[in-house]
Amino acid sequence: MTAPLAYQPDPKLDLVLERVTEASPERVWLAWTQPEHLKKWFAPRPWTTEECEVDLRPGGIFRTVMRSPDGKEESRNTGCYLEVVKHQKLVWTIALEPGFRPAKSSGIPSFTATILLEPRGKGTKYTAIAMHQDAAGAQRHAEMGFHEGWGTVFNQLVEVAQTL
Amino acid sequence: MTAPLAYQPDPKLDLVLERVTEASPERVWLAWTQPEHLKKWFAPRPWTTEECEVDLRPGGIFRTVMRSPDGKEESRNTGCYLEVVKHQKLVWTIALEPGFRPAKSSGIPSFTATILLEPRGKGTKYTAIAMHQDAAGAQRHAEMGFHEGWGTVFNQLVEVAQTL
Image (cartoon, rainbow over all chains, first blue to last red; front, side, top):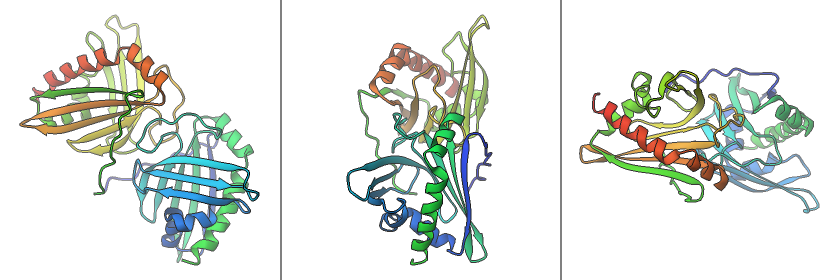
């Protein structure tokens, strides 16, 4: 396998969540890549994830539909996987449709997400990075609640991972 | 290796060039992936390709600088490889920067290019597809001279491939 691309974070453009958990990389990976598990943690409660579609390979679809507790609001998001390294690295973007066609703009600032899992004892050092097009997009995503949202659902992910 | 993604062309959104050449897939591949060869054919003459940078893997850079014959105009383009299947398939996009960050808009309509090489006798059935975000982008790219330009440089590519 070729050497992984070196990642060069840019604090003006990237939002980063770093956590350590006792859940193993294998369990965290299952939680991120199996729809029946992902639906249990992906939306910050009391929102739910009603639909989830995963085709886990570069170009494959990553689609979710989240719903508000009263059922009146929905958040539909479709992304495209870019890189899949089992138990280690998952990269997906909303800047491309599945199959790699450039995506049209949506309400959310365009970003590419990288999930990095490193063994830490029997657990995992977890890093989630959202790379944005520009500083305005990063700022808007932060104002929309990136840190609170991704932090909350990470705790939900750990609860689910520990049951796997 | 997982099954290749099925490609679903959309005539409203995609521009397609199909050709058959006696040059082998291996030679056509070299012409597309080695900067010293690519620089000889990539720009429609009398324009030249002054710089070319290739990091041939998903997320790697594909960068070119083309220059007008009087040296006064330049066309600088940076793309990101998405899929690399030696001698068969090359996918790159200008919708993402190298490393997968969403790219800012440029003067060219955003597109993802797929180059498909199939053996045809000792030669190659060559298909180049540009997938656009929307019909307006496809139309604008066509008006900018996609068919003439990509057709012309394909002939230039064949000349180069036959010397390899």
